[in-house]
Length: 241
Image (cartoon, rainbow, N blue to C red; front, top):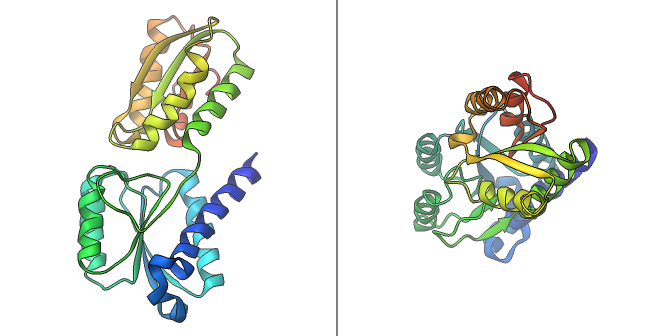
């Protein structure tokens, strides 16, 4: 399963950089790959999946001969905006952004375009600005897979759904996919179904502790929208996550 995840992330990374090097929107850059620096605006270094992405992106960039400048915002839209403007002032040739707040990212993308810098959104759609390129998974299917996996471990009982940040469109889509499977299931009782600001690990741990206490430890499964929150739930001494 881990290898399948890494293969999927490698495909996403390759598609992002292929957009920079070979996409029609980036044609002026294509002849000089070795001179290209791409600004990478990442979410957080504290969750394992983004470390995988960083490793894979560096590997793919090395193959293509481009340079990467990574910035990590620790799930803060304010930090991401500051980093974005700072690196934009350094005259990067293109930008790959994983928006922390989908709506707020529109302003950043517009600023880049004002300076003729193309922008790829990686993993998270942005409806508030026109992107040059977009690379994403089937996020609704991710939620479906999560729910089906939970059902294999716990086919009935009380379920807790901890979704991601409400400002992130991927969090909503993950949740919709999971609910599509779980809500019609008469053997499942969803006792908690809420978003978690900033995908907060400690917040998810607190929710798990509260739900376990409220229901006398009678929680069959927790479905969380990312591994960081899953780690928080696990710290609460819960059942399947």
